[in-house]
Length: 135
Image (cartoon, rainbow, N blue to C red):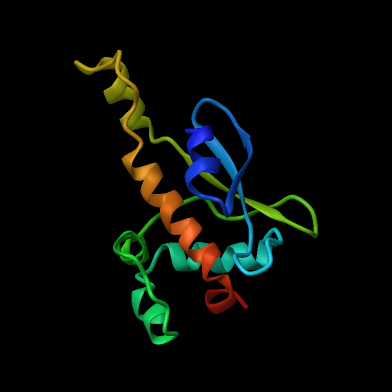
């Protein structure tokens, strides 16, 4: 999961990770600067809403994958202050997913991270269009 973050989501970086929690930083798509706590609060807000109309009304040309991410409703951890310069967001692998993987018939196969990938896609989209979405 950690390697997939940096390869497929260039505006999302892993700050720290353990077995089930990944702490992430987000960079602004227009200048590459890390987002602050106040900015990540706005990201948190946008994660829980369909942002398609906002982006379309700003004349953003979205790919099909970006449209899917824009309309996704995602619940994540609230921003955590680290320094004045940046903060983190947390995503956690859900206990039901871990239990199902450990006890299910496919326990030896890699864990499906469909929900986590959906979250990362939306985070990256919000970061890409932070000049529109984040004050």
